[in-house]
Image (cartoon, rainbow, N blue to C red):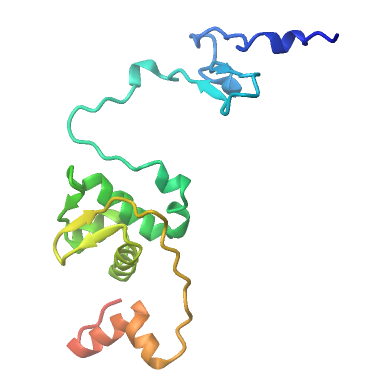
Length: 183
């Protein structure tokens, strides 16, 4: 009868000493305690982690924001471009406990350093993807839908498509209509 190898008999790997003044905080992750489960009946491997900077652990002292892990895990993140992600995270950060905020578009554009056209496209996409609600003045970050809304971008083919959907064309039409020149 074969005997079990020595490294499989102990479920825990050796625990390295904690980081000190002469040791790096996390050289190649060596100060993390790792539990290796050798039993095939267990479904997941569990890693115990220790803070790298114990004196700097975050605490909730006043208001706080959160993003569900499902946002990344279920693919919502990958359906958004950089302006949409920036606006979405901003709205989460400034929202109250019900997801409500009332920042104006000019303040949002200034803080996020994006153009009005980029803001409008990002806002409308987040609405279309059922991630936020907007009534013209008030934003609400909504609970995540069951699945991400994936929209295929359709090319703008006609002059009518350009006038209705292209932000640059819409901006130009507004400028022409009101006689203002913006660049």
